Length: 180
Image (cartoon, rainbow, N blue to C red; front, side):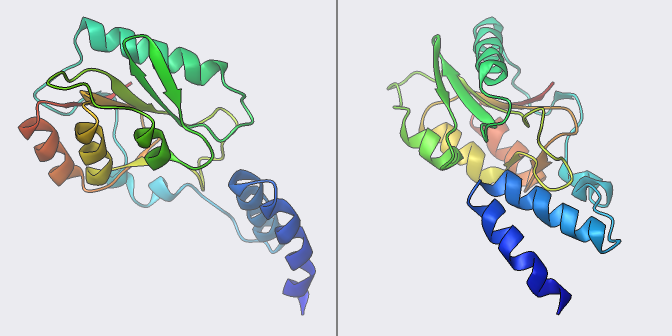
């Protein structure tokens, strides 16, 4: 029972977080002569290339929010799990280990004012074969609920679900989907 040998390694790595666990599983596959490839190799329709995908584009204020979010993501620990940042009026909320939904709970909607952006970028040390930022219609609805104007993703380093419905929702709600 060769697989039993791997169980202690998997348990040990699972205590270090999902990135460590996924890398250990890849190593186990490699030991078994199984090659792991990026999921987007076979599903290129699930990621987006550079450009703006909606009628609405980031304005100058949005560009400042994008720049601030990217700066905060770059400053965060490169070994961390942080893939997302919300930037609004020079205030930054970073995604914690609990994920994007908890990050949305930390931001309050400003009545009758839509400002701010969600930026989701993979960390430099993430393994794109098994761990890419994922967004879709649900993410856009959460952005709308807290009054954000749009989302920004990294060129071909994302998984975008419900693309057609998401773009329609963003256009209907005057939001943007921008890929850098």
